[in-house]
Image (cartoon, rainbow, N blue to C red):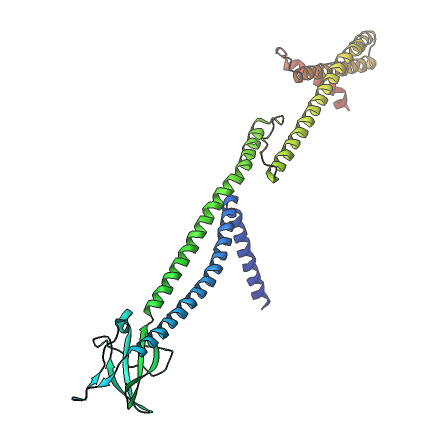
Length: 353
Protein backbone atom coordinates (compact mmCIF):
# COMPACT_ATOMS: atom_id res chain seq x y z
CA UNK A 1 0.00 0.00 0.00
CA UNK A 2 2.84 2.36 0.80
CA UNK A 3 4.49 1.57 -2.52
CA UNK A 4 1.21 2.15 -4.38
CA UNK A 5 0.66 5.48 -2.60
CA UNK A 6 4.22 6.54 -3.42
CA UNK A 7 3.68 5.59 -7.05
CA UNK A 8 0.47 7.64 -7.19
CA UNK A 9 2.20 10.66 -5.63
CA UNK A 10 5.13 10.31 -8.03
CA UNK A 11 2.76 10.09 -11.01
CA UNK A 12 0.83 13.15 -9.78
CA UNK A 13 4.06 15.11 -9.29
CA UNK A 14 5.28 14.06 -12.73
CA UNK A 15 2.01 15.16 -14.32
CA UNK A 16 2.11 18.47 -12.47
CA UNK A 17 5.72 19.06 -13.55
CA UNK A 18 4.82 18.23 -17.16
CA UNK A 19 1.92 20.68 -17.08
CA UNK A 20 4.11 23.41 -15.59
CA UNK A 21 6.74 22.76 -18.24
CA UNK A 22 4.13 22.89 -20.99
CA UNK A 23 2.67 26.11 -19.58
CA UNK A 24 6.12 27.67 -19.30
CA UNK A 25 6.75 27.06 -23.01
CA UNK A 26 3.69 29.08 -24.01
CA UNK A 27 4.60 32.67 -25.04
CA UNK A 28 3.64 35.32 -22.52
CA UNK A 29 1.30 37.15 -24.89
CA UNK A 30 -0.64 33.93 -25.49
CA UNK A 31 -0.83 33.29 -21.74
CA UNK A 32 -2.18 36.80 -21.15
CA UNK A 33 -4.66 36.57 -24.03
CA UNK A 34 -5.71 33.05 -23.07
CA UNK A 35 -6.27 34.08 -19.46
CA UNK A 36 -8.38 37.03 -20.58
CA UNK A 37 -10.38 34.84 -22.96
CA UNK A 38 -10.88 32.15 -20.30
CA UNK A 39 -12.11 34.72 -17.78
CA UNK A 40 -14.43 36.21 -20.38
CA UNK A 41 -15.68 32.72 -21.23
CA UNK A 42 -16.50 31.97 -17.59
CA UNK A 43 -18.27 35.30 -17.13
CA UNK A 44 -20.27 34.87 -20.33
CA UNK A 45 -21.19 31.30 -19.36
CA UNK A 46 -22.55 32.48 -16.02
CA UNK A 47 -24.38 35.37 -17.67
CA UNK A 48 -25.79 33.10 -20.39
CA UNK A 49 -26.89 30.54 -17.82
CA UNK A 50 -28.82 33.14 -15.83
CA UNK A 51 -30.27 34.81 -18.93
CA UNK A 52 -31.17 31.45 -20.46
CA UNK A 53 -32.98 30.24 -17.36
CA UNK A 54 -34.85 33.51 -16.85
CA UNK A 55 -35.70 33.86 -20.55
CA UNK A 56 -36.94 30.26 -20.83
CA UNK A 57 -39.04 30.74 -17.72
CA UNK A 58 -40.48 34.00 -19.04
CA UNK A 59 -41.26 32.43 -22.43
CA UNK A 60 -42.97 29.53 -20.67
CA UNK A 61 -45.00 31.88 -18.47
CA UNK A 62 -46.07 34.00 -21.43
CA UNK A 63 -46.99 30.86 -23.38
CA UNK A 64 -49.09 29.51 -20.52
CA UNK A 65 -50.79 32.89 -20.10
CA UNK A 66 -51.55 32.98 -23.82
CA UNK A 67 -53.02 29.46 -23.70
CA UNK A 68 -55.20 30.37 -20.71
CA UNK A 69 -56.42 33.58 -22.33
CA UNK A 70 -57.16 31.80 -25.61
CA UNK A 71 -59.04 29.03 -23.84
CA UNK A 72 -61.13 31.58 -21.96
CA UNK A 73 -61.81 33.52 -25.14
CA UNK A 74 -62.94 30.39 -27.02
CA UNK A 75 -65.15 29.34 -24.12
CA UNK A 76 -66.86 32.73 -24.16
CA UNK A 77 -67.51 32.53 -27.91
CA UNK A 78 -68.44 28.89 -28.40
CA UNK A 79 -72.11 28.05 -29.11
CA UNK A 80 -73.00 24.37 -28.90
CA UNK A 81 -76.50 22.92 -29.17
CA UNK A 82 -78.51 20.16 -30.80
CA UNK A 83 -80.59 20.25 -33.99
CA UNK A 84 -84.23 19.74 -32.88
CA UNK A 85 -85.09 17.81 -36.04
CA UNK A 86 -82.08 15.47 -36.38
CA UNK A 87 -80.72 15.61 -32.83
CA UNK A 88 -77.19 16.15 -34.19
CA UNK A 89 -74.83 18.48 -32.34
CA UNK A 90 -74.74 22.02 -33.62
CA UNK A 91 -71.31 23.51 -32.92
CA UNK A 92 -72.09 26.87 -34.41
CA UNK A 93 -69.13 28.99 -35.49
CA UNK A 94 -65.78 29.25 -33.86
CA UNK A 95 -63.10 31.87 -34.57
CA UNK A 96 -60.02 30.81 -36.50
CA UNK A 97 -58.04 31.20 -33.33
CA UNK A 98 -59.33 27.82 -32.19
CA UNK A 99 -57.03 26.05 -34.61
CA UNK A 100 -54.25 28.65 -34.89
CA UNK A 101 -50.61 27.59 -34.38
CA UNK A 102 -51.56 23.92 -34.52
CA UNK A 103 -53.89 24.17 -31.53
CA UNK A 104 -56.45 21.44 -30.83
CA UNK A 105 -59.93 21.99 -29.39
CA UNK A 106 -62.79 19.64 -28.44
CA UNK A 107 -66.00 19.89 -26.46
CA UNK A 108 -67.18 17.05 -24.22
CA UNK A 109 -70.72 16.70 -22.84
CA UNK A 110 -70.79 15.68 -19.21
CA UNK A 111 -72.99 12.59 -19.00
CA UNK A 112 -71.99 11.68 -15.45
CA UNK A 113 -69.19 12.58 -13.09
CA UNK A 114 -67.09 9.83 -14.62
CA UNK A 115 -68.44 9.75 -18.20
CA UNK A 116 -67.85 12.32 -20.94
CA UNK A 117 -69.18 12.24 -24.48
CA UNK A 118 -67.34 14.06 -27.32
CA UNK A 119 -69.59 16.55 -29.04
CA UNK A 120 -67.60 18.86 -31.30
CA UNK A 121 -64.20 19.16 -32.89
CA UNK A 122 -63.31 22.75 -33.60
CA UNK A 123 -61.23 24.11 -36.43
CA UNK A 124 -63.37 23.12 -39.42
CA UNK A 125 -61.64 19.72 -39.80
CA UNK A 126 -60.57 16.77 -37.71
CA UNK A 127 -57.30 17.98 -36.23
CA UNK A 128 -56.30 14.56 -35.02
CA UNK A 129 -56.51 15.59 -31.45
CA UNK A 130 -55.02 12.96 -29.14
CA UNK A 131 -57.04 11.79 -26.20
CA UNK A 132 -56.20 14.21 -23.41
CA UNK A 133 -56.76 13.59 -19.76
CA UNK A 134 -59.11 16.14 -18.30
CA UNK A 135 -56.50 17.82 -16.13
CA UNK A 136 -56.42 21.57 -16.24
CA UNK A 137 -53.08 23.34 -16.75
CA UNK A 138 -51.09 20.21 -17.60
CA UNK A 139 -48.63 19.14 -20.30
CA UNK A 140 -49.82 16.08 -22.25
CA UNK A 141 -48.52 14.54 -25.48
CA UNK A 142 -46.42 17.63 -26.18
CA UNK A 143 -49.37 20.01 -25.65
CA UNK A 144 -50.36 22.50 -23.01
CA UNK A 145 -53.92 21.64 -22.00
CA UNK A 146 -56.47 24.07 -20.54
CA UNK A 147 -60.06 23.16 -19.55
CA UNK A 148 -63.06 25.49 -19.51
CA UNK A 149 -66.71 24.82 -18.66
CA UNK A 150 -69.23 25.67 -21.39
CA UNK A 151 -73.00 25.37 -21.83
CA UNK A 152 -74.08 22.93 -24.55
CA UNK A 153 -77.81 23.22 -24.13
CA UNK A 154 -80.13 24.30 -21.35
CA UNK A 155 -80.03 20.83 -19.87
CA UNK A 156 -76.38 19.87 -20.51
CA UNK A 157 -73.03 21.18 -19.38
CA UNK A 158 -69.85 20.61 -21.37
CA UNK A 159 -66.09 20.94 -21.00
CA UNK A 160 -63.91 22.70 -23.55
CA UNK A 161 -60.49 21.10 -23.97
CA UNK A 162 -58.00 23.49 -25.57
CA UNK A 163 -54.48 22.28 -26.28
CA UNK A 164 -51.62 24.16 -27.92
CA UNK A 165 -48.34 22.41 -28.89
CA UNK A 166 -45.22 23.10 -26.87
CA UNK A 167 -43.01 22.79 -29.95
CA UNK A 168 -43.16 26.52 -30.70
CA UNK A 169 -42.05 27.35 -27.18
CA UNK A 170 -39.28 24.78 -27.31
CA UNK A 171 -38.15 26.14 -30.67
CA UNK A 172 -38.05 29.67 -29.26
CA UNK A 173 -36.07 28.54 -26.21
CA UNK A 174 -33.70 26.60 -28.49
CA UNK A 175 -33.14 29.75 -30.59
CA UNK A 176 -32.42 31.76 -27.45
CA UNK A 177 -29.95 29.15 -26.27
CA UNK A 178 -28.32 29.00 -29.70
CA UNK A 179 -27.80 32.77 -29.75
CA UNK A 180 -26.48 32.67 -26.19
CA UNK A 181 -23.95 29.97 -27.12
CA UNK A 182 -23.05 31.95 -30.23
CA UNK A 183 -22.55 35.02 -28.06
CA UNK A 184 -20.33 33.05 -25.66
CA UNK A 185 -18.16 31.72 -28.47
CA UNK A 186 -18.04 35.06 -30.27
CA UNK A 187 -17.35 37.00 -27.09
CA UNK A 188 -14.57 34.62 -26.06
CA UNK A 189 -13.05 34.83 -29.54
CA UNK A 190 -13.17 38.62 -29.49
CA UNK A 191 -11.67 38.62 -25.99
CA UNK A 192 -8.84 36.38 -27.24
CA UNK A 193 -8.19 38.61 -30.26
CA UNK A 194 -8.32 41.77 -28.15
CA UNK A 195 -6.07 40.15 -25.54
CA UNK A 196 -3.52 39.23 -28.22
CA UNK A 197 -3.59 42.79 -29.58
CA UNK A 198 -3.21 44.36 -26.15
CA UNK A 199 -0.53 41.85 -25.12
CA UNK A 200 1.37 42.48 -28.34
CA UNK A 201 1.34 46.21 -27.76
CA UNK A 202 2.28 45.72 -24.11
CA UNK A 203 5.14 43.35 -25.02
CA UNK A 204 6.51 45.61 -27.78
CA UNK A 205 8.74 47.66 -25.38
CA UNK A 206 10.02 44.41 -23.83
CA UNK A 207 10.84 43.04 -27.29
CA UNK A 208 12.74 46.26 -28.02
CA UNK A 209 14.65 45.93 -24.75
CA UNK A 210 15.46 42.31 -25.61
CA UNK A 211 16.78 43.32 -29.04
CA UNK A 212 18.95 46.04 -27.52
CA UNK A 213 20.29 43.68 -24.85
CA UNK A 214 21.11 41.08 -27.53
CA UNK A 215 22.98 43.72 -29.54
CA UNK A 216 24.92 44.82 -26.43
CA UNK A 217 25.83 41.18 -25.72
CA UNK A 218 27.05 40.80 -29.30
CA UNK A 219 29.16 43.96 -29.34
CA UNK A 220 30.15 43.80 -25.63
CA UNK A 221 29.64 47.53 -25.43
CA UNK A 222 28.00 48.52 -22.14
CA UNK A 223 28.23 52.20 -23.02
CA UNK A 224 25.05 51.93 -25.12
CA UNK A 225 21.71 52.98 -23.69
CA UNK A 226 18.49 51.00 -23.75
CA UNK A 227 15.40 52.70 -25.21
CA UNK A 228 13.12 54.34 -22.65
CA UNK A 229 9.35 53.70 -23.09
CA UNK A 230 7.03 56.68 -23.15
CA UNK A 231 4.70 55.29 -20.48
CA UNK A 232 5.80 55.42 -16.85
CA UNK A 233 5.04 51.82 -15.91
CA UNK A 234 6.80 48.61 -14.90
CA UNK A 235 8.49 48.30 -18.31
CA UNK A 236 9.87 51.83 -17.99
CA UNK A 237 11.17 50.95 -14.52
CA UNK A 238 12.86 47.87 -16.00
CA UNK A 239 14.42 49.99 -18.78
CA UNK A 240 15.77 52.49 -16.23
CA UNK A 241 17.18 49.67 -14.12
CA UNK A 242 18.91 48.10 -17.14
CA UNK A 243 20.29 51.51 -18.13
CA UNK A 244 21.69 52.02 -14.62
CA UNK A 245 23.20 48.52 -14.70
CA UNK A 246 24.87 49.22 -18.05
CA UNK A 247 26.23 52.52 -16.73
CA UNK A 248 27.66 50.70 -13.70
CA UNK A 249 29.20 48.02 -15.93
CA UNK A 250 30.69 50.69 -18.19
CA UNK A 251 32.19 52.46 -15.19
CA UNK A 252 33.55 49.17 -13.84
CA UNK A 253 35.08 48.35 -17.23
CA UNK A 254 36.69 51.79 -17.39
CA UNK A 255 38.14 51.32 -13.91
CA UNK A 256 39.43 47.85 -14.87
CA UNK A 257 41.04 49.18 -18.03
CA UNK A 258 42.63 52.01 -16.08
CA UNK A 259 43.98 49.53 -13.50
CA UNK A 260 45.37 47.32 -16.27
CA UNK A 261 46.97 50.34 -17.93
CA UNK A 262 48.60 51.31 -14.65
CA UNK A 263 49.76 47.73 -14.19
CA UNK A 264 51.29 47.66 -17.66
CA UNK A 265 53.03 50.97 -17.01
CA UNK A 266 54.35 49.65 -13.72
CA UNK A 267 55.66 46.46 -15.33
CA UNK A 268 57.27 48.44 -18.13
CA UNK A 269 58.85 50.91 -15.74
CA UNK A 270 60.04 48.18 -13.37
CA UNK A 271 61.48 46.15 -16.21
CA UNK A 272 63.25 49.18 -17.59
CA UNK A 273 64.65 50.14 -14.19
CA UNK A 274 65.85 46.58 -13.49
CA UNK A 275 67.94 46.46 -16.64
CA UNK A 276 70.52 48.94 -15.31
CA UNK A 277 71.37 47.14 -12.02
CA UNK A 278 71.30 43.77 -13.79
CA UNK A 279 73.76 45.05 -16.35
CA UNK A 280 76.05 46.18 -13.51
CA UNK A 281 75.73 42.81 -11.74
CA UNK A 282 76.55 40.97 -14.97
CA UNK A 283 79.61 43.07 -15.57
CA UNK A 284 80.89 42.47 -12.04
CA UNK A 285 80.22 38.72 -12.28
CA UNK A 286 82.08 38.52 -15.59
CA UNK A 287 85.09 40.26 -14.05
CA UNK A 288 84.86 38.02 -10.98
CA UNK A 289 84.70 34.88 -13.13
CA UNK A 290 87.85 35.88 -15.00
CA UNK A 291 89.78 36.48 -11.75
CA UNK A 292 88.81 33.21 -10.00
CA UNK A 293 89.85 29.61 -10.50
CA UNK A 294 88.52 26.23 -9.47
CA UNK A 295 85.21 25.88 -7.65
CA UNK A 296 84.84 29.61 -6.95
CA UNK A 297 85.10 30.20 -10.67
CA UNK A 298 82.32 27.65 -11.32
CA UNK A 299 80.12 29.31 -8.67
CA UNK A 300 80.69 32.69 -10.24
CA UNK A 301 79.88 31.23 -13.67
CA UNK A 302 76.62 29.76 -12.31
CA UNK A 303 75.69 33.11 -10.78
CA UNK A 304 76.53 34.76 -14.07
CA UNK A 305 74.24 32.39 -15.95
CA UNK A 306 71.40 33.02 -13.48
CA UNK A 307 71.87 36.73 -13.84
CA UNK A 308 71.77 36.46 -17.59
CA UNK A 309 68.56 34.42 -17.32
CA UNK A 310 67.13 37.12 -15.06
CA UNK A 311 68.05 39.70 -17.65
CA UNK A 312 66.16 37.73 -20.30
CA UNK A 313 63.13 37.49 -17.99
CA UNK A 314 63.21 41.26 -17.44
CA UNK A 315 63.48 41.75 -21.21
CA UNK A 316 60.50 39.45 -21.71
CA UNK A 317 58.45 41.38 -19.14
CA UNK A 318 59.30 44.61 -20.92
CA UNK A 319 58.31 42.99 -24.22
CA UNK A 320 54.95 41.84 -22.80
CA UNK A 321 54.29 45.27 -21.33
CA UNK A 322 54.93 46.89 -24.70
CA UNK A 323 52.74 44.30 -26.44
CA UNK A 324 49.85 44.99 -24.00
CA UNK A 325 50.29 48.67 -24.70
CA UNK A 326 49.74 47.97 -28.41
CA UNK A 327 53.28 48.52 -29.57
CA UNK A 328 54.46 46.42 -32.49
CA UNK A 329 57.60 44.46 -31.59
CA UNK A 330 59.79 43.30 -34.47
CA UNK A 331 60.39 39.57 -34.73
CA UNK A 332 63.88 38.14 -34.98
CA UNK A 333 65.30 34.61 -35.15
CA UNK A 334 66.08 32.79 -31.91
CA UNK A 335 68.81 30.19 -31.53
CA UNK A 336 67.11 27.42 -29.55
CA UNK A 337 70.39 25.56 -29.26
CA UNK A 338 71.95 28.43 -27.33
CA UNK A 339 68.89 28.54 -25.05
CA UNK A 340 69.18 24.81 -24.34
CA UNK A 341 72.89 25.09 -23.65
CA UNK A 342 72.29 27.89 -21.14
CA UNK A 343 69.60 25.87 -19.37
CA UNK A 344 71.77 22.74 -19.26
CA UNK A 345 74.73 24.74 -17.89
CA UNK A 346 72.44 26.20 -15.18
CA UNK A 347 71.08 22.79 -14.17
CA UNK A 348 74.49 21.07 -14.25
CA UNK A 349 75.51 22.03 -10.68
CA UNK A 350 72.18 20.81 -9.31
CA UNK A 351 72.30 17.58 -11.27
CA UNK A 352 75.90 16.81 -10.17
CA UNK A 353 74.79 16.03 -6.63
